[in-house]
Amino acid sequence: MLCAGRSIEHDPRGDKLKRQVDVPPQKCGTGADEVDEIFTVNGTSRPRIEIAPGERKFWRIVNASADRYLDIQLDGTPLEIVALDGMPLAYHDPEHPTRTADHLLVVPAGRLEAIVTGPSAQAHAALRTLCVDTGPAGDNNPGMVLADLVFTQFESKGFKPPAARNGQSTPGLQTDEYRKIEEYGSGVNCSFHRRQERFLHQWLEVHSRRACDDQRSRGYISTLAHC
Image (cartoon, rainbow, N blue to C red; front, side, top):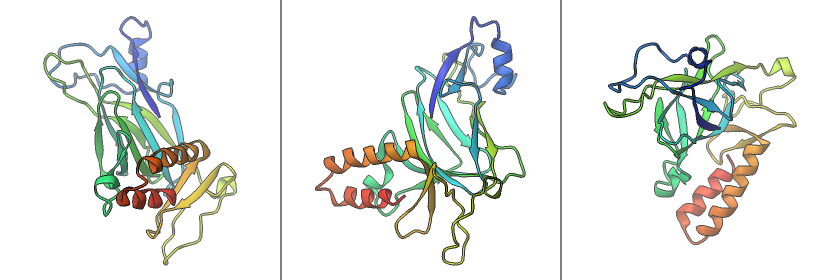
């Protein structure tokens, strides 16, 4: 996901766009400036992302804004962080290849790679950025909705959750568009879109060459290849 800033300073639809992404009327933090920029995702204001309750997906989020911060939060579910700025967490701590967080600050040009789980379909859920106080001389960096999650049902599309493992259900998509890849030894399922899967293989190819003599990296690459 490419999150980029869109200037609304001289846009006659500026107020409408702020309402569209739910920018709160009160100012964020101590900055005195008015809100003159909103975030788009892949060039679209507040797109819709399909996900089924309990489905697990790999997301790579890039802050492509020149000077605005993202404080990423997904309603109703924590982020299972895999890497930050292209650096796998397991590179430094192979025994803890992921960590969970309710929200995470992503600076301009920063990258977040995480596994997300589809929240319950009983309530509206959104991917959002929270208010970031950049100080009295900083830009107004308000919270807003980046994208809405649209819930799908396995049965409604002819999908079936994979068989239970160790007595626990592990739902995931099984179609021509999605492949279920299991994390080695953990019983955790991840659903990758083919484009995400191609990126993963490219990443593995590059980093496996760089770390061919690094036992920790080889162990992480082996694990990630199965997730």
